Length: 100
Image (cartoon, rainbow, N blue to C red; front, side):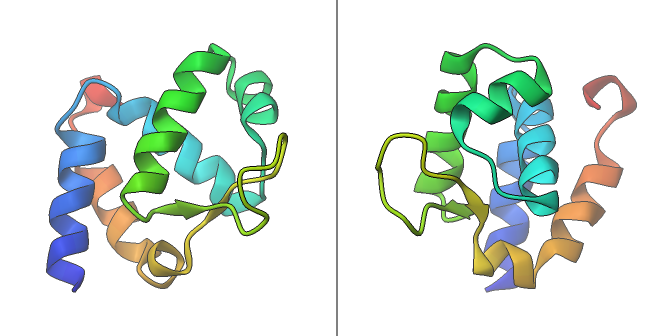
């Protein structure tokens, strides 16, 4: 299972243009839950950009919304990623410096 997560993270954070923003989102959510608007303000990114990344991260099981899709409900790092957060940190550190 960790091999699949490692591959997924390499693709989502190190293999695509949006990886840097996804790293920032995951790091923020690891510190505390945020809704999309709060993340947009905290990270200084366009709301639609944040929503795109959140949808992608949620679709891939890295974040969750326990309260469902209600307006302004917060996102959390999924228990799957939380239990394997060291893998995320390892890959984040190996990203080329131009991508961080």
